[in-house]
Length: 306
Image (tube, rainbow, N blue to C red):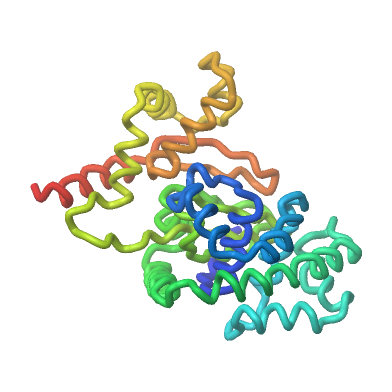
């Protein structure tokens, strides 16, 4: 059965994404903003705010699945504070009812804990960080989302997701009815998925325009970085025949998981690998992405003006 795709855009997603990156430091080495962004934010936050946010680093990462589910079923006109007010004002039963069909294993106690723990910290984050984000970011996200809505009519769900995410393949899966796709700036160039009962949320990155035409575009730098390592080139050749899981790569190549995972990540964020999502069990396989090779040639020719 085919699934429906909804293109969503909201400052609420960007608030949650930036907060996630700051408190968990997850993927920071692979993000364009890099570890220096963490240091820059900490220099701007007061010691009291930093101390208040610090405990969230030890909370379960799966808490964000609940936060993003609440965000996905918000009123589309809500701003950050409106969203946080809504979470505060709803009763524990009402709040739980919003996401319990999507997350059958979630308890009302966990739902209430997440609301009570995160809302005060997200208010601080919105006040001391999000309100200082350039309005340009919002414009870029809204324009990109509108472009994807137009393309959805022409390309269909599967192709649109692969195009927007530079290689994520979501084939029709039994029970999957809806995929919510939304753009983000802070998590570029990675994709993040949230799996639910009957639904998925996928975030895709939007690149910031280059400040100068003389500077190599970030997407070209990702390509050249990924291809600079002979091991990564060999890995591309290895997955050119059929999709392989990370465990299959390690076993067949006789390599440890961590270095192979790093190589896959570098190739994936450059758009040179497809990621095949294999159902709600969150298993993945990887294959070469022919469009990525074509894009490398296009970006290189455009930059050096051939």
